[in-house]
Amino acid sequence: MNKNLLNRILTSIILLVIFLFCLFTQKILWTFLLITAAILSFLEFNNLVKKKFKNNQNNILSFNIFSFIYLSLFVFVGYELYSSPPLDLLFILLICIFSDTGGYIIGNLVGGRKLTSISPKKTVSGSIGSFLFSIVPVFVYSSIYNQTENLIFYSENLSLLIATCLFLSLICQLGDLFISYYKRQANVKDTGSLLPGHGGLLDRIDGIIFVLPAAFIIDKLF
Image (tube, rainbow, N blue to C red; front, top):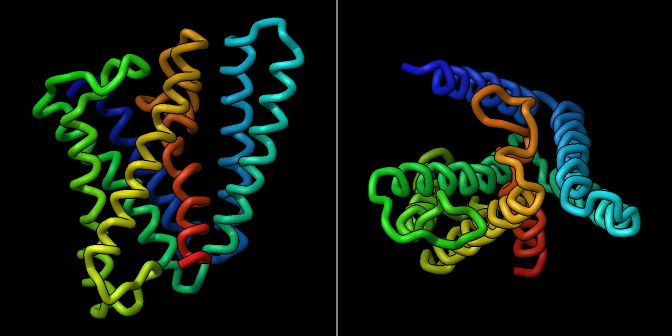
């Protein structure tokens, strides 16, 4: 096992422990985790913007204002979606995790046609894998609750629930591409170096940042 892969695995385990501890302990710890993630993401995105626009202070300021407002919304939505036990929030996050995992596994196993020039490593097969894996939490969540009526996006029509998972997977993938675009524009591989084997925090939560607000809107409207 090479050193980079070992660092990646160890970092993933540590992140998972911190995440689950904050999520299932107290709402205040979950909120603290959200705020910390938002601050670090703001700093990393600000670094990308600075490299992209260089000395154009007006553009840098505009993007800083936009990212501050949006990440504040992210914190608010993450706070509002919290419940005890936080299985609704866990369900949404599992969609992101399985979507990312499916894209990585299928993309590496199958390969094939590139999805977009924005992120050369992403493939059409990987995108399909993301969609397919994103519906796995439906069955995981159902086994936890033992009844589908408790699902946050509950519908008597299972196809609607699956469609919701697929839509959130799409949002997750678009969020990833959004950050990938700015990394490419800034001519950097990662958003930072905070997480050994992974890069920056924003590299890991780019999809989640966009999925939580989308899930919140779906839950409130439907």
